[in-house]
Image (cartoon, rainbow, N blue to C red):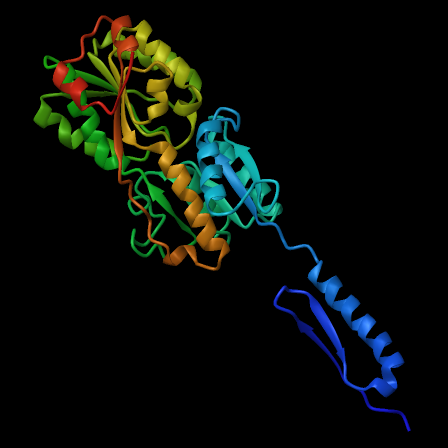
Length: 349
């Protein structure tokens, strides 16, 4: 009669597998069975884990957005994700052409990315029209509630969440700062959101009368409109320029041109992103963009660990920065008042 035997595979404290033979009379058969069972266990353990794939939708070219992308990657590294090792990032760029979003998102959907990260609420809105199942994280966006992206900031309720830069609320602050450095200012030319979103503009229009300012709204749909827009501002004798948040990437992709046109036309200008001041613009007031992209990584981490974007509150910025470029001020012969300089978080000399 054949002997009955039992084989038990267990794990030691060190993590090594151990095969125990309970019947020595059938040791030969037991060893063979044990070998097969161990081989199966090892093969199962060695199956490669699925590497999460993140779609990264940038307004500017992937090379030009290296600063914010690096901040995002830094945030991922702080959470244990290293690009090329245990996470993959597929970068796609609008290059200032907002109509490219549907095709770029469709491409990311075909790649079966786990999450789509966007650099603006405009891109997030366009992405949501393509997919309502893949989680979308705004690394930098306007008011997602006003734009219909979320049911509320506390409970988004759909597949979109992330960070808002509160740009609508800050639009009025741009005018206040211009008035402080130019007390006699009466007319401000405005480069509005190219998508036609009116939240930011309404805020600015609400504040303007209290500052005794009139606004000249310049129409810009594509980059080729910029020179014409500046000519219109000069012809109208605008005393300053306010650039609003750009959901399309047209402004951010052409920062250098906008800054140069402002200098050429002797227009003191204020911008909604720090990158403009770094590129030679006079003044910027905005949420800390680098910090927001770094924080976006926390949303990616939570979603990869099973949280739903519908339940992740939209985060509002904790820090805003006023950056003043004295080189730019000198180019247009402008003296920044000491009280404004004293409030600057950073001064470029």
